[in-house]
Image (cartoon, rainbow, N blue to C red; front, side, top):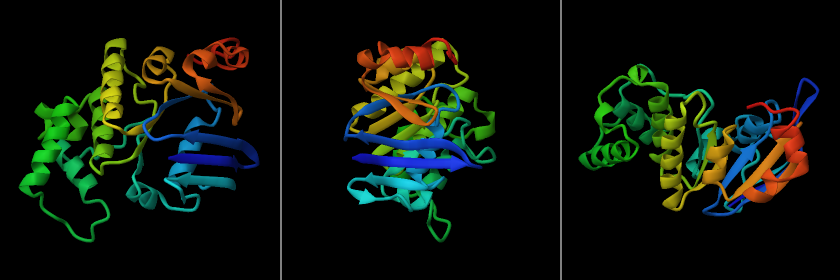
Length: 242
């Protein structure tokens, strides 16, 4: 489904990604880990067109999307969340989903009954059914993260990129988010998950890719990667960032 081939990206002469390659098959839930500054979020930005690659190719569903804008990659079924939830604070929870539903429409449209029922159903499934008429600014951080995730589901995406979906959460809240992501993946959606909470990654992902200084240093099953000496040294050992 996703092919990243020898992608490189730098900022001000400093390499953020160097010859990064990654393949993700349909239905996989892949963890993406590494120390702070290792290039994880930059890789998601490159994949979605926020920060175009300087070299290399990104293919999605067999199509070259290397030079596409974020709105075009989203239209193809590739969506993402961010480290800081990007919700529309002055809109209600339902209005946030409505805005996502009609993104790109040249004019304001009213929700049809069927649309409203579908969006309400998504909110119920994500634990926000009782918050439908609340302003997004009134939501807690975990609720805002859930809202951002459910906004990505509105367009029925094929691939969801999740950038630290449990950041700032308590262990109980983290467990709840992990369950929600597992439920999303169980419906056939492919996911790439950036997260520093190794227990969460281990429970969600059968495969992990590790970045360090903008390069892939490991890619394999969760067990193999978490026992890899290079990973232990870079991420879980002397330069632990947890």
